[in-house]
Image 1: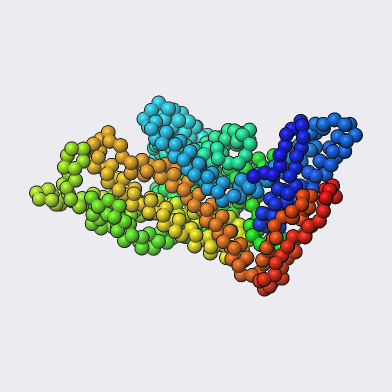
Image 2: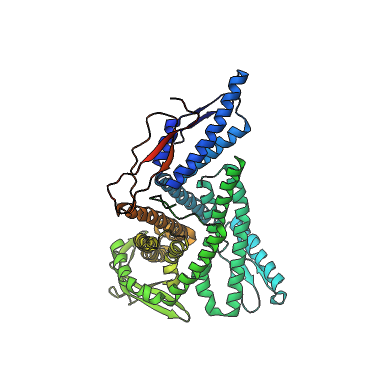
Length: 252
Length: 261
């Protein structure tokens, strides 16, 4: 729990004992020192505010400097407690699985629906056919129903090949991640584009692999590309977390 | 920092993580592909004994690895153990009375069997470590998790496919809980579990490694708790010398300039 209590616009109350106890609970010296620096900065700002308060004889309104320090301190507290606490992590992991399962079952329930057809045909097969024709115009690929059709070998895109499972994993991860809501939605929006691009790349790899050598298709389809897709999505999510944390720290 | 007792490896930059994942993926995937038969074959007796234990309506006749061109698949030959009532109809085993001999066959590609374990291995080898022993700890922690992953994947998928085939004839509209689970795993649930288990193994190994270091007496830090008065901040943390197990390291406190007694 954060020992800092802030009533913006009125008073700033810092429980030094609680902060010290919090620092003591940190198991690493590095972490304790980081927090110590944050607390020192915070206290310096508080003293400035106190002096101004004494001079003016009125209740100080928290200025931008102090708010920045407080936010930075809260952010470090949040990082230390929310991300590294095993209980919080366990809860997030369970929420992630439940959310993913709900999305997955919801999508399974839509099998055979117009939405499924729209996602697979319009959202997956047609862009793939366009890309194939763009890269190799001689191939003559076309989107026929749920098939990427081409003379010499095409691909059947089924429910499960449209990359939505990667999107669901990303969505569930963003929903349970300890980041601000604005950053969450930004990450999700960009994530949709990232997943689409990754999945199109996967379909192209499978398409050309099948045409080049049938023997390549099975290991690529069953093992390599699902793992590659999920790892790339993980890297994107991780990169967004780092970026989001930096932005929060930079903003204050 | 050298003075910390439970420090963990620094979180890598995304580009560094991507490079590590690429290298680890290439290595683990190559090893899995090269030794897939050797890896999966010892598991077959386990699968054969787990499936009837989970559902005694079925008996496993044989389990082998079939090769159809370049792709290898684990093939389960199954029969009903006794007549079963499904959807108001009785289904008899192959070879029962006048019923001709036969069997159900379910195949899962070897790559599919190993897929989730490969993902766990890639993660635990790609994430940076502080001490080399953490790799061993990660593998030791991940091993039972991967066993769980394999057991909730292969036997339950086989049972789901068997019941799906039977119910498709006898009770087409019926809800099949095993099939839901199987579809969940194949629809990305298995990969999500793999990522979670990989992360769990990494986190637990880091904690365990730090605990081992702490217990071994290389470094022991016992704090006497926070001081009773407010306004005190840690000045520096003293570090215990190697081997002195009973020495207590304390944080020295100094009064912060602005605090009042």
